[in-house]
Length: 136
Image (cartoon, rainbow, N blue to C red):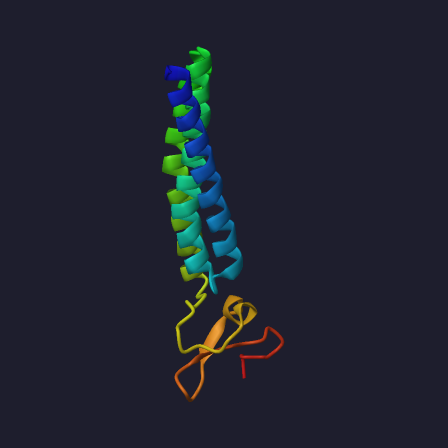
């Protein structure tokens, strides 16, 4: 009976882990700017990997492996600390590079958001090409 409970717990953790990891991958592809992408990676990817590793830890417990379980729990702790920290560092670096966030009324493409920006007459941030001489 306990084997069935472990098996069910392992399968549920792995399925939800794969689901959240796929949601994270779709979010990185579909979301418009680096800030939104960093947000989805820091949340859903951390949860997906955490659930998948929890499933592996439960499998190690069910098989009676002691040492790998401790290592998996330490890896879980490491991922829960580093994923949000890395996403914060990416968002901060984007902010320091003056990458403007996407707004709902923007009609710019994601490649336009990567370029350094200046403001035009309409108040929208417009991309500035590197070939323009701004020293005049």
